[in-house]
Amino acid sequence: MNRGLPDRTLRTTVGALGAFHLVLGLYQFFFPGSFFHRIGEYGAENTHYVGDVASFTLAFGIALLVAVGRPTWRAPVLLLGAVWYAIHAINHLFDIGEASSQATGIAQTLLIAVGAGLLFWLARAAEAAEPSVGPQGRFVDYERDR
Image (tube, rainbow, N blue to C red; front, top):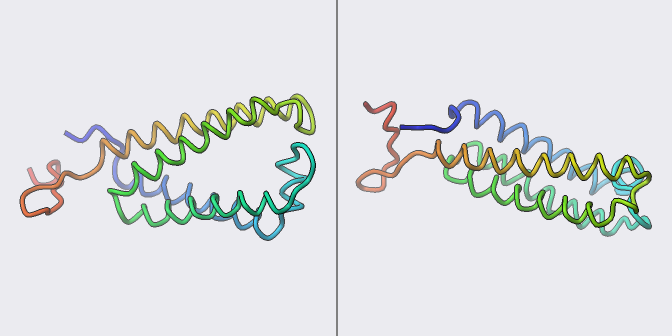
């Protein structure tokens, strides 16, 4: 019995997350100074490192967009994102005092931590919804094939 989210919901959610990360990564890559001053103002400005972060953000966005059409990719890609966001939140926790304000540092840390939790939940839902592999390696949707 499939206890995950419906496939259409997962496809839409994974696609929206992929588009978000693709746009965010492009913003980081092409406008690193703007990203630093508007979103990531921690410590001294370093546009090279913003570009480095953009490379991972873009790769994650692209992987999510590919996972829209590949159900078996969804859980691992979402789990990777959950781990990334969790480590990112811990990093922000250590550097709250370096944000443009204490309130900004706390808010960003909490938002990233919530993002980690949501990505982990989605990874679990995607895993539960993943089609089973039947004989001869064919994917079987037991709900549909009943």
